[in-house]
Length: 91
Picture 1 (tube, rainbow, N blue to C red):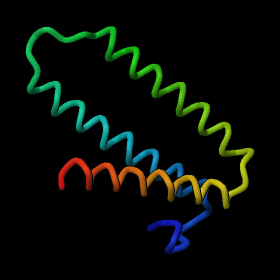
Picture 2: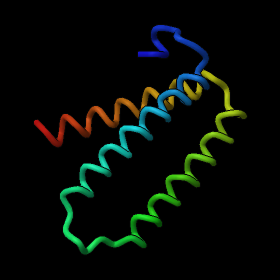
Picture 3: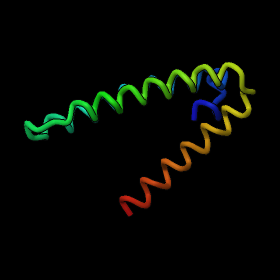
């Protein structure tokens, strides 16, 4: 929506979306952890957090070199795939 409304540049829209996704993910993880038993695999959680951090760093560095049109298209594809997954899961 932010791209379609021409809210700002593609890079700023991607950065804003990333912050939203981070806050949403932290909220989801906190909710799931509140329902878990005492046996939590902290190594797995830390490994996933590290992978997400590294992926975010790589993505932010690559976005500085890519054409904004490519960033818009990749963001659109990502949102489309996520939407299709939600429809398939909850249909």
